[in-house]
Image 1 (cartoon, rainbow, N blue to C red):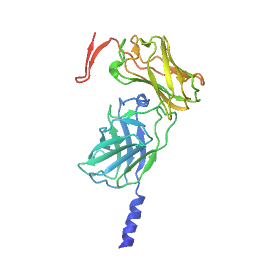
Image 2: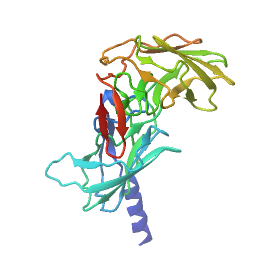
Image 3: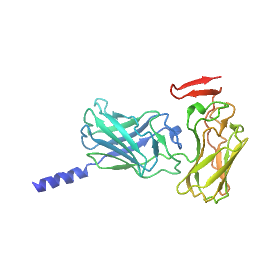
Image 4: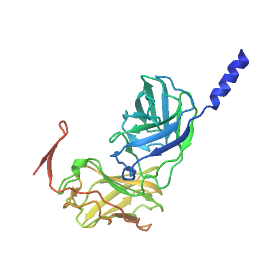
Length: 299
């Protein structure tokens, strides 16, 4: 009896998830961006997963930073098979882990997709290259690794879409992210190049740095076609960097399309990044925002 039990345990240990992959829209693969298009995790389960058990997606720390309970739909590649429902929970550290608990029926041994709809996941900081550390497992199948899409090296993301209107003082943060190739000494300069008049208003917008390790202090000045930020106190190491501008410290300029390609970032220790696209600024001006009713009032 003991030998049979051990044999069964060994057989079970060999069962493994396979064909693991992740897909997200290129426009969503930017730092601190809430997904506008579905994010899908595909895998093939080796064994039937009973209802009430777990599918676990593991990613590098803070790859996604929200929501804590993202909604998901399980899709079976074989359309004739009805997939179970599931509820998910997300933690960001020490690894980003999304744990989905099935309900209603068993998950067949087959190819599946976990689909997180628009607004369910928000990315963390920029990642210069494809990261390791992405796996999927179930309660009954051991882990299998896949590859991750890169989070673009530099991006400009508004926290709230209702700030993307002409002549609007921001009610949320504005996150400008890039990958620092060369360490920047204290007293160094970060220059954010923008289309002329993209931002107006406060000449010294308030920002802080998000990076690995201890972040330096930063003081910024706004010009017609750039924001210049000078670091102090300590060195800014290489790696993913985000400058977060506090609410009400930036004001948008005139309306413009998203086709502009004048957005790039450089430091006094490194060359400029390649040009990238800025968000579209819509015509009109939002005078007020009612967060409880999600109503916008226009001039």
